[in-house]
Image (cartoon, rainbow, N blue to C red; front, side, top):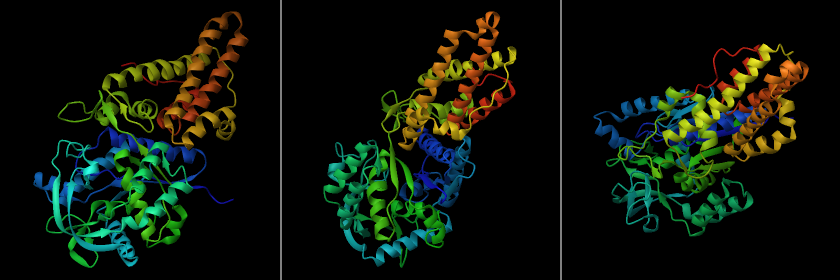
Length: 481
């Protein structure tokens, strides 16, 4: 039987600003799925990194009086540090689009699309949103502005650029969506991108004049142009697994599962798929689209003052508190409202008072009542349990992290009710054998919880496991704030 393989990547964050909750959410979600696949016995390649070319970054560097390379070096390091602070897998691959290997691959990708007749040059005039790094048609706009960057004026670009024959791939894309109804999740995003493609695709610009955008990968054979940032950055999904130099490694891992925000739907599930076809590569495996994290009904913004810094939350509440909130309190596919008060309330109710308190009570009874230790079920036994399969494994296979986490807390709630109903802390005096049997049952249930928590809250899972094996809990798992 061949080894099971799984390749997952996030969108590369654009390094024109510091990391925010949206980045933390996507990083943690992809990490949970990567860990879950390993939990099931898969060999996993997990990729993220930073997108470092383009007009926004060039302008931001000039704004700060820095060389663009110096600027991206500094900000990329902040994102790499964030992946560590979020507890992402230690073997995570971190790519930068300024890496020589990536830039060579991007140029080779261009050459193959050009050889296939899909790149040509023409004069054009468009409205351009620097915030999105995307061209905008009038149908994309709200009151003449980009709805995602409403506070910025659109720029008018009139020049000669290279174009990609996106229009050529309309039927190919529709065929991909039709053959695989799970290609884009959730299903309403698949309907959205299908409708966009059906409306007749327009070719899009894939270069900028070097004199206007010097910070980019040179177009092969034409030093007067640099690559359009999306055409460059998306190639990282293939370059990190060996393409085009090591096709054995590439074939071992491809195709990829992509996590992306809803503002990347078009680029990830249509533009990139057409580019892959043009370069002679098969489509991605699946694209998972996140909603936005908003606060008090509004997009997080420094000017409004509703920005929530994930690193501040980690410092005050701990890493697993943030991972828990992302897993259970933020909707897996739609926009979710988050405030610091909501975070604190969930922490106290579901971590300190629920999981933490239950663990503390059970370990205390286990130690005090001299309950005989039992063999805990193996991970394989837990995975084969029908209830776990139907409520936990199936949910994560559908990328519904919230549903899977709800199931864990349902088991914790059942334990809390069991303690209140059976009251082993009282029956130990009248029926010690029954009390010990009840505590042994609670130990088994907590063990199952620890195994299910491994992909979601790995540090907590380890601490619970240790406490169950030793009967010692040095300090409460979560302290009330």
